[in-house]
Image (cartoon, rainbow, N blue to C red; front, side, top):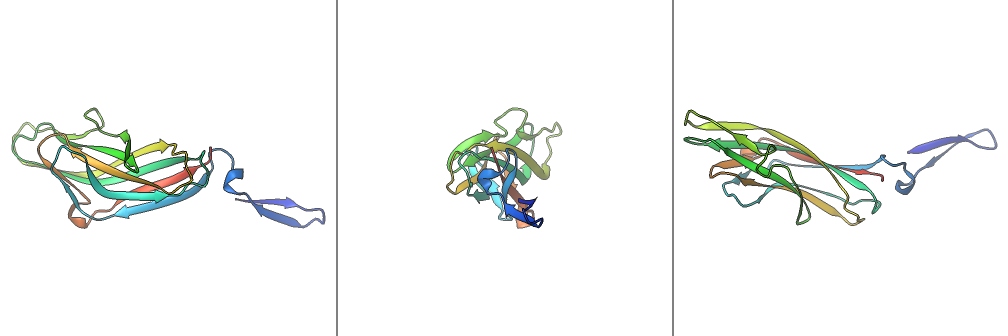
Length: 170
C-alpha cells in the first residue's frame, strides 16, 4: 500500500509498506484456484473433490480466509429420503473444518414420492484459518456420502468450482 508524505523540499514522496507493516485486518494477498475436473462420489469415506489451492503466507501470524464455492450434483433413486453428502476442508492432510458432518450443514435431500431425484447447485462456505507458517500451504475439499447414493462435483466437467485464499494481517 503506497503512503504519500510531503518531504522537506515540499515534494511528494511515496513509500511502500511491507506485509509486516500492514495494519491488522489488511488483505496482504489473494490467491484463487479453480477446477472443472469431474469427481464422482459413491462412498461414505471422504474423497478429494479435485478442488485445491495453495498460498504462501508472508507472516507466520497471518490468518488465511478460505472461501469455497463448490459445485455439486446429487442423484438419488427410489426412496431417496436422507440422501446427501458432507463436505470438509483440509490444510495439507489435516481436516480443519467439517462443513457438513451430519448436522444442519450437510447437503441433504428428502423426498416422499420414492422417485428419482437430481439436485444440482453450489455450496459456498468460508473458514478463517491460522496456519502459523510462512511455508506454502495447500487447502482442499473432500466429500463423503451420508447415504448410499452418489454425487458428483464439477458435473460433466462443465461447472467450475473455486477456492479463494486471502491472507489477512494479524
